[in-house]
Amino acid sequence: MILLTGGLGYLGSHMAAQIIEQGHEVVLVDNLSNSQFAVLDRLSKLTGRVIPFVQIDVRDKAGLQQVFSQYPITQVVHFAGSKSVNESIQQPLDYYDNNVNGLISLLYVMKEAQVKTIVFSSTAAIYGEPEALPIPESSRQAPITPYGRSKQICEQVLQDLAHAEKGWKIAVLRYFNPAGAHPSGIIGEVPNGIPNNLVPYIAQVARDERPFLQVFGSDYNTVDGTGVRDFIHVQDLIDGHSKALAWLATQPQVFDTFNLGRGEGVSVKQMLDAFSKAVGREIPYKVVARRDGDSASVYADASHANALLGWQATRTVDQMAVDTWRFYENLV
Image 1: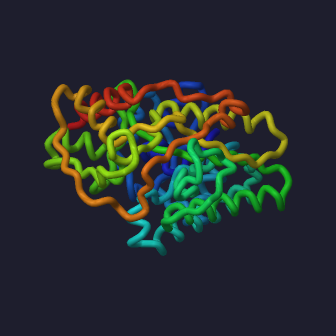
Image 2: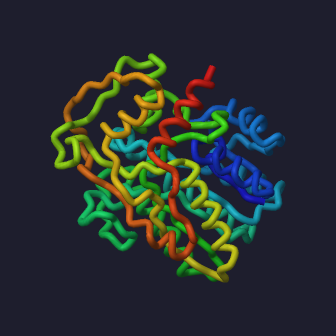
């Protein structure tokens, strides 16, 4: 059985759908701080299964111990964590507490239960301003926000643990910019409050929930002056997790890190154009000042994941826009 922390979140719910489809048993835990209980109903509708769910914060060690004693967990995918770059600048203590202490709490309980296989959600934000493009895993780490630094600390914790104790099988996946939704249109990204990610914000503008998209800067040295990012379809990202779990199962002991991205940059304006095409009309936007901490261009060298995991992103930016819009059209 596979434990998914943050299991009702954007990535956790898509992972749950995929591994149930593959025939695996899952149990989900989530504190619902950036997710909704309604996602559980959507997952049941999508999979035709009643999925075990426990509302719990991963920092609640006693509660986690109960989950591990109740379910025959053999592998963990740790999605739970705070992920807003801007929010982390305003609330650094919350980010270090949730991300770092949440992981440590989970690892203590895993160790007690003798469950030593974990896939960890990390981020391209640990690189900071890129030295060169595309960014390999060996690139200098110089995170410029508390969010990025909290994930860097988590990676170090995992690496030190793998070095100190035998038997740990750890894959760290550094995400670039997840976007899109399940092709069924049943699950997708519905953040609580104002979206921190570009694509759900565009979708809310398209639904007339917000008046326009703010484009932060149009004077970068990029194809059209707007920031360039490596947008990756959520289904491609989840494929990477499934392949990481399968690869870990073949290893006696391992710690490794993998970039998950398409390996090419897409500008904010290009993503906006793709979404306008999917919706069938122009999406209103206004250019505003650059944000602190934003780089001009960030995209991955994902060749390591291809070589070891046999993984490669295949879905296009147009597919991300179409799938996202299908999901948002289905939202009540």
